[in-house]
Image (cartoon, rainbow, N blue to C red; front, side, top):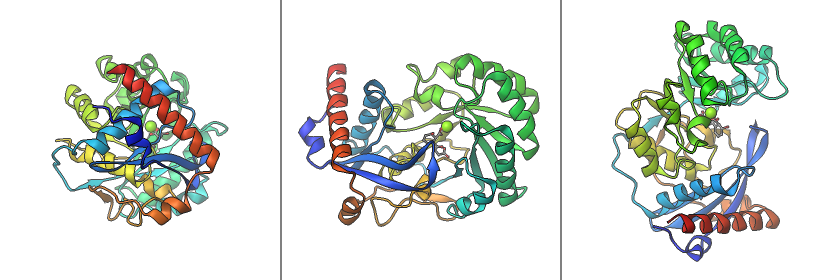
Length: 328
Ligand SMILES: O=C(O)CCC(=O)C1=CC=C[C@@H](O)[C@@H]1C(=O)O
Ligand SMILES: [Mg+2]
């Protein structure tokens, strides 16, 4: 099912939302929003992604806008706080935006930083959540296997729930997983799921203990639920740093998974300094609601992207739409 291009562009709006602090090297988040029969939906692959990868995000956006969300097992989703690679002194200020969250995901292995920076940040996060809180780390594939082993040793004393994508390739993940197994620290795969031609390869290769599942990049809620059903591994649903509209897609995905044992990375609307709705999906008491989001016309205007960026996104939408038309 592929709506025509005019059906997508008719309501399309491109926004640029400011972030409270830099995250993955960006200071504002661009997204294209459009409205389908089921409500508002979001197309927001990161700007550096090529059209083939971005087309799967469009599939996800259309799925959410045009098809009813699947049956839900819960009406709220417990979420983790997401801590960008900030200075230790800034940690409490960031985490204050995630009230009630018992789990913190700490970004590590940031380009231009050293392991001591990661240790200091994780220490500050542990101080913040206390002994009962949970700390997971995400290296976005930034370490080789030896660096990852060294880093996990340096950070293990902070009691890690798991380490997400410590290395880039499936082979490296399998290797580091074996090396740290004796410490009881699980390895999660993220990029190895959402950027792979076969999202289940990492699971079959025995290279991960759990999978990070993101609705938009994996082609939508239904496609993601198929992946969840096909793997025997536990999953964590996470955002792609979306607006509250994209977060609502993630919330419905998380709500549709029978067993959800880990807190989900869906609290990231709290990292935005502006959103497209007057009732954003931000954490309250450590969880977010499962609901669709109405956009606010005044906010779409306030955060409208500049004309050249809007043109860029509309052209990208057109190219990705053509790719999807060719796939069916
Ligand atoms: O999982 C979370 O806590 C929030 C989402 C998050 O960390 C990410 C969102 C988007 C892009 C990624 O760099 C990043 C991730 O790698 O998980
Ligand atoms: Mg990740």
